[in-house]
Amino acid sequence: MTKQTTMRGIVLPGNSTTETRTYDVPEPGDGEVLVKVQASGICGSDIGYIFRGYKSYVGVSGPAYRGVIAGHEPAGEIVSVGSIRSRFGIGDRVLLYHIVGCGQCSNCRSGYYISCSSPERSSYGWQRDGGHAEYLLASERTCIALPDALSYVDGALVSCGFGTAHQGLLRIGTSGADDLLVVGLGPVGLAAAMIGRGLGARNVYGVEASPLRRKWAEGLGLFDAVLPADDDVNSSVQEVTVGKGCSRVIECSGSAQGRSTAIAGAAEWGRVSLVGEGGRLDTEVSDLLLHKQLTICASWVTSLQDMERLAVDLARWQLHPDVIVSDRFGLGDADKAYALAAGASAGKVVIIPADEPDDRHSVAK
Ligand SMILES: [Zn+2]
Ligand SMILES: [Zn+2]
Image (cartoon, rainbow, N blue to C red):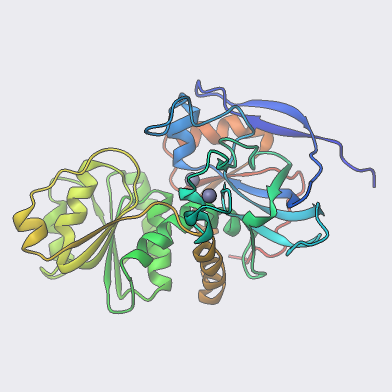
């Protein structure tokens, strides 16, 4: 078989379009591996920070996106290894922690590459080439073994979205003693419901404004009730919880209104995790926070170790993130994929770059 020397990759010009370019297939150097990408998710942050127009991080000058191949939620198979000493070898199935940290600062040493303080920090699909391509040059340190029981699409979803939801639930100590309220049923909210089930939550309730998303969420069988985010939402939550509220709440909508719903829906002594990006938090303090003895936790992404643990636990729980995927597209249809993800997809949108996808491990559903 002749070795492939060029590949297609998708860049985002920042005007709500996509552009396909041809690149040389990279060669892995020391500490790197080459991954044949089998699945690559589109994340809400790709839409908000890159697709519609380039935005900066707060406090950082210039756009967060540097014109590289997009896609920060990749999973695939290692096809070439750059170092003799490597944890992974050719043929290994991996998902990627989506940020390459310096590896030396205190956050990196505890696995939180997301909070790396070095200027070297780079995210796939933002500051270094990402997963919307046939191949991805990956830092070996960011590779996480994909358990055999999980499909590549499962793996791509663990990268970023499921990792974020998982950490949000770990930070508030979700367990079998809890009822869980999930506010905002986009991909991260659906992830929170699935992981909440895995962690044993007794009842899982969802709140969502979009009728399309509510219908999709109801079809997944993860929720005891899916409630509309309307003017009566607070009383609806009280009704399904028999006036108690939920001991654990995770807010994934990123809206001020969603945060108010989350706080109002928390039980006395409850814990609320905020993971949705953007917007503001506006709340009455005495009755809603102090007198209810609430704990509010703000959580940003996850650590390498917790992402690794999540992949193992999902396999053990026999739960498959890929059930929340509503739409799959080839690389040639990246424009359609992004338009749908930026508009009104029911669930998660994923790009499958390979012409002949290898989903041997995908479980028949
Ligand atoms: Zn993301
Ligand atoms: Zn660092």
